Amino acid sequence: MKRFFMSLFALPGLLLGCSQGTPGGPGVSAPAPSYGQAENTFNLSVPRLATTLQQGEVFEANIGIKRGVNFDQDVALMFTNLPQGVSIEPAEPKILKGKSETKVKFVATEAASVGNFQVKLTGHPAEGGDAQVDFSLNVAVKDSFTFKLPTVVALPQGSEVTFSVELQREAKSNSDVTITFAEFPSGVSIAPDTAVIKAAEAATRFQLTATAAAALGRFDIKVTGTSADGIDVEDVLRLDVQGSN
Image (cartoon, rainbow, N blue to C red):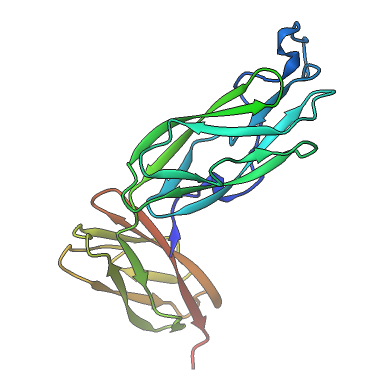
C-alpha cells in the first residue's frame, strides 16, 4: 500500500531551503548585511512546503543550519506548538558544532490530533540570541483500509479477464470507497472504469478487455481508493499483456 500524498519529512535533506525565520547567535545585535549570512550568526532550515504526518506514523526529518563566519557552536533545538499526540525523538535534539544538520523523528500516536498546525522551531546556542522559524505540520487520519490485489493479472491479446479488488478494512472503517484506475496501455480497457465498494462490502470485480493489437508487456497500473471520509489510498495493479495463443 502506498499513500497518495508524499510526506516531505520522509525525504531527508530534500527541500531544505532558506528559512523565513529570524537569525540567532552573538552577532545578531550588529547591523544586518545587505545580503548573505551575518558574521557570528546562524539560521535554521526546514522544509519549504507543508508536511503531512499520518496518525500512528514515525517520520525522520533533517533540520539544517546555515552558519555565518565565526559561528561554530552547538545549537539546541526546541519544538513548540506541536499537536497533541505528536512528539520528537530525541526529546532534546541538537546540531553539533561543525555540523550542517541533524536528524529528528516526528512520532504520532494513533490518537494524535488531526488538522494543520503551525509549529515553532527554536535554535538555542550556548552564546547569543535564539533563532526561530515556523513550519506547517498537517496530521492526517490513519488509513482505514489497505488493498488486496492479484499478484499479476495475465491478459492475452483479443481476450477478456475478470479480477477482484479487495479491501482489508480496519475495525473503524465504515465508509464507502470509490475505486479508480490510471490510464491503461493502448488497446486495453476496463469495465466499469470506476466502482464503489460499499461500507458493508469487502470487494468488487472488474473486467479487462484487450484488443488483438493491444500493447504487449508488463504494466503497473495505479489503483486509487477514495473513502467517503476523504482518505486516499494508492496501490499498483500489475498487468501482463501477452500475445494471443
